[in-house]
Image 1 (cartoon, one colour):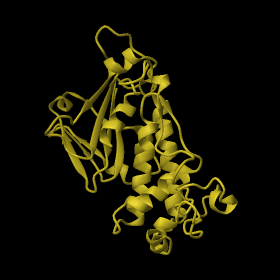
Image 2 (cartoon, helix red, strand yellow; image 1 turned 90 degrees about the vertical axis):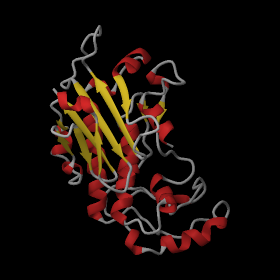
Image 3 (cartoon, one colour; image 1 turned 90 degrees about the horizontal axis):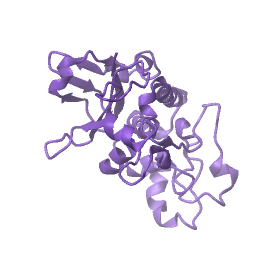
Length: 268
């Protein structure tokens, strides 16, 4: 739902009067957890590492959007309820969270029949796949990357604009129109807008690239040639080794971002 992602990133100013009236989330207490939804919806041949990156990418959208981010308990730990669509009465076995990051408890059993039996035939083979069980390395990666997204958000007030007017003047989306690259959202945030006071951001411009494509993607934009862009320092020194491969090619006026990755570029 690319349109909904873009509208949420803009703080819901398409249907809310102020950013604070928009709560952005990708999972809540209802239905499956995000991890379980990925298990059900991802291509059967998607690897464990790819699925972890899907989770990290999804969590980055509310983390780096205007408005109020809302996160479900354990999302950063790849929380699972073994695909139970309604765990209200499922007890602690299906609702527990391992805060030690030893396991996400995937494959704890087949969820109850009441609201899940019609999908048991799909769930059984997935729950039996030990190759989809995250280990400590995957859990540390997800947890650390999520913390990095929060640090990026905290690093500049451009991610926390206070009014719809500020959002409309400082937030732009590139890669739009009929020639757009599918699966790619490019959002720009600016502290240098004519007629507006600076907000005290350490960065004059921030560019966020959400690459949901299964391959590395290059986005070219002529105006990039006038900027001195670099990967956000938090990501450059952060938990995710893949995002560190993202780069700005000034000669090509392009940003290059790995598959299933959210990269944040900044200029001072």
